[in-house]
Length: 285
Image (cartoon, rainbow, N blue to C red):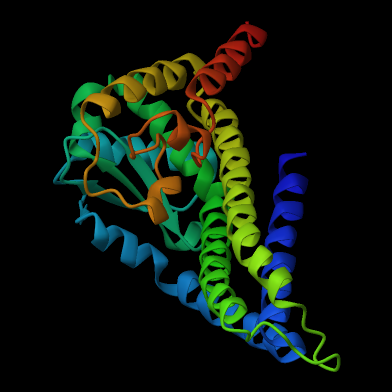
């Protein structure tokens, strides 16, 4: 059901972008929007992992440098039936972790120095199993596509807003364009809709990764305990270098804010995630 939901949401994002292109330039605008999306997705597919790892100063480690952590990832990868990913450590005291890479053969997992310090080995296993689940389910590629299309829609929304204000939103009937008022309305509504769709995609993938990650490590309660601890610690030690464009990659939201930010968070409510894991542990008894 979650996979079907994700497919439908990505389809909605694509159609929304095509509609934005049409509103800007009619049929020619649709073609432009389509090729722009293809180019952005191709760039994200090949280079997004390198960009995000460099953005957070992640340093690749070997088994000799950190045998306990490296060995844990290797053991979990074997249990998940995955190739061994590259392992990185992020020089940050804020406890968090993420996975990146276009497919299981070109994947990487990264953990902050802070998360290695505050979690027990069992809790850390739950976290890394969660991240490897993202790799196995190809969530990183899906999330990257969703973020790329949503970003393109926001950019097109800015273009459409200026076009509508200066009368450029009117097109002749042959081009199939709409009125300036309609274009201005879409310029406001479409980016908000894209953000909500991206949020829904990310939230559904987090629930799936919690479920499959708990199965990989064999202990749902260890992941639930880790999430509870990370939620509290990340509020006390926020990741100041975190960016909204990459917040969806982390196991807990690295951004801090009030109720409004939580409402539009790419992560599902922590209480619900913990409750699902505890219910899973209860059923397995």
